[in-house]
Amino acid sequence: MGDRNAGNYYPIMIDLTNKRCLVVGGGKIAERKIESLLASKADVVVISPALTERIADLAAAGKVAVLLRNYEAGDTKGAYLVIAASSDSFVNERVRDEALAADRLISVVDKPETGSFILPAAFTRGKLQVAVSTSGASPTLARDIVSGLKAKYGPEYEVYLDFLNEFRLKVRRLVNDAEHRQALAREIVRLDVLGRIRSGDFMRFRDDLFRKLEAETEAFGLEDWL
Ligand SMILES: C[C@@]1(CC(=O)O)C2=NC(=C\c3[nH]c(c(CCC(=O)O)c3CC(=O)O)Cc3[nH]c(c(CC(=O)O)c3CCC(=O)O)/C=C3\N/C(=C\2)[C@@H](CCC(=O)O)[C@]3(C)CC(=O)O)/[C@H]1CCC(=O)O
Ligand SMILES: NC(=O)c1ccc[n+]([C@@H]2O[C@H](COP(=O)([O-])OP(=O)(O)OC[C@H]3O[C@@H](n4cnc5c(N)ncnc54)[C@H](O)[C@@H]3O)[C@@H](O)[C@H]2O)c1
Image 1 (cartoon, protein in one colour):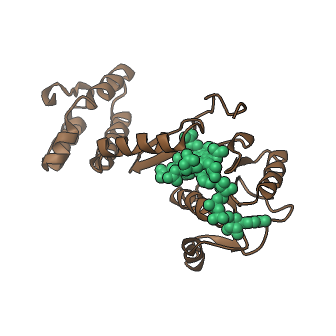
Image 2: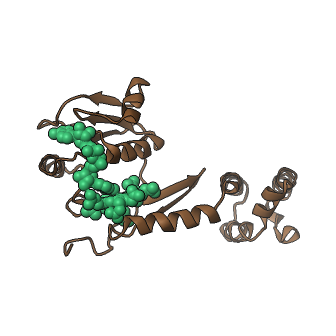
Image 3: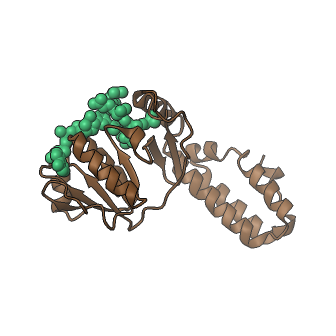
């Protein structure tokens, strides 16, 4: 494992909406990658002579396009991102070489260090996305860390992030002074908004706050709510 990436992977949030993503292989591992690609609204194409039941269901429902055959040279053409997830390491190597030659993003599930990216363990709460990677050293540890974080950052974070997003957009629209905007950005996360979401007191609080912000704008501060 001497050639494992030493931890200098570049973390990036990438928009895959309508991007063609090719998955070679239709087994358990491919299934997991397909599910996460679909969750990111990618346009998924699967090439594999056999499929798990779940992938076959996704194909029947029109959620993924499937070519029910072995990988052939040239298959990576037109793909923005490629995942080599077959059980045949020779095939995965060919997929990788072809993808790399055309500078496509490529992940190789059996020899991750030979590809150009790896996947983290991750979960979302609306706009909050938490992703953990051990640079491939221990996917199981990554998953354990994520399950701890999942318990800590519960479903209320979805509402919280939507609120923060709405607040930020309003502030950007209404408040011209950059320092004032920054002060509000710092203060808003110090308010116990999560407590209000949990206690059911949130909607009234939100409406009051936004009403005041719209009315007072440049003079608006959050001291009264702290
Ligand atoms: C996090 C997660 C996300 C996902 O897959 O979407 C993920 N692996 C998960 C689970 C998992 N994977 C494995 C086990 C069995 C126990 C074990 O062996 O440890 C379990 C546990 C289980 O399944 O319970 C085996 C395994 N994994 C890799 C290899 C090949 C190798 O290392 O050479 C082998 C050996 C295969 C073999 O020898 O047969 C490689 C990779 N797995 C990665 C991601 C990337 C690095 C992540 C990081 O940086 O930490 C990387 C590098 C490539 C990649 O796939 O991008 C997902 C958790 C999903 C969740 O949250 O539930
Ligand atoms: N990255 C990870 O998280 C991780 C975890 C465990 C295992 N693995 C590795 O991932 C690989 C796949 O594991 P799996 O459990 O999904 O295996 P699997 O046997 O369930 O599935 C393999 C799939 O590859 C397809 N396939 C075989 N030859 C092909 C070809 N020429 N062209 C296209 N598709 C072809 C098969 O039809 C099948 O659908 C294994 O090599 C395993 O070592 C990776």
